[in-house]
Image (cartoon, rainbow, N blue to C red):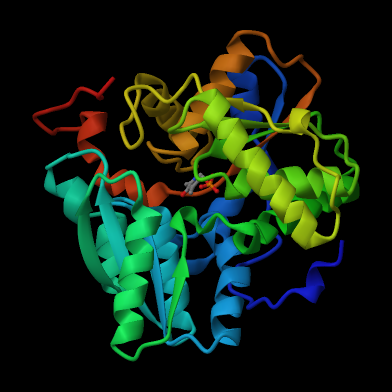
Length: 341
Ligand SMILES: *Cc1c(COP(=O)(O)O)cnc(C)c1O
């Protein structure tokens, strides 16, 4: 694989740190827990989408785009990072926000990522929950084109073969760091949603024959559908990246037991995970993605699914800005204090 063949704009602070979590490791009394800090990619408080946007926005520039369009849920970290990266590159940004949760409190509808979307100068269009938001995105792109603009549309989560290249690169980066540290990685765990992160990681880890097993903790779809989405995108990405045939179906493993009442709703486990990491390690997770991913990891450690002496790397995909959209779920002085689920 030679990723330098693909156009790329440098936006992220890379490599992100790979750190040991001594206090969490001690508290759980299980495997050694490490964290790959993709919450520290730099743009607008960071997150995993910035790695994808390096490849996506290079393509937008190559096509002569003057406006970037994308879509996501109200508290989309992807929309916020797209708005920030577009601003950096002098491109306009228009965001389609889908109301998947029907939450009405103003923290959720106006604070957190929504506040930052506005701050980065993006324009926003609101949609009710809709199973075909990428279809709506195509319609809006056609509308801009009819007005004489040159739109570049990025699918939800930046999850296509171009965006996934960012995580092919991240897998190579992680294994290189571990080699330098003399760290034997026994498992990698992360939150999986629109599939681009996991698909890219699968391709990168398989493409360099790392032998490192990967587990995605689902935040939305049931296991079978999540794995199918990831597998399809991984196979397509492998073909683009130049390692066709490297990905096998059994490389794609998702555990979707930690979704709770649905996408965008915190769970007792995600709130506990967020509080644990905040209090033991000074690290911020989020209720929609990284908190559920960590809740899954913590539960699997408690079930004895990883052995003492093994090294587990949790990829922190970011999202802490979303915390400010969920203040009520933590019960610190707000009248409605119960986590949903
Ligand atoms: C988007 C996102 C994910 C999931 O990544 P996908 O590529 O959509 O699967 C995980 N964590 C955070 C914080 C995210 O914003």
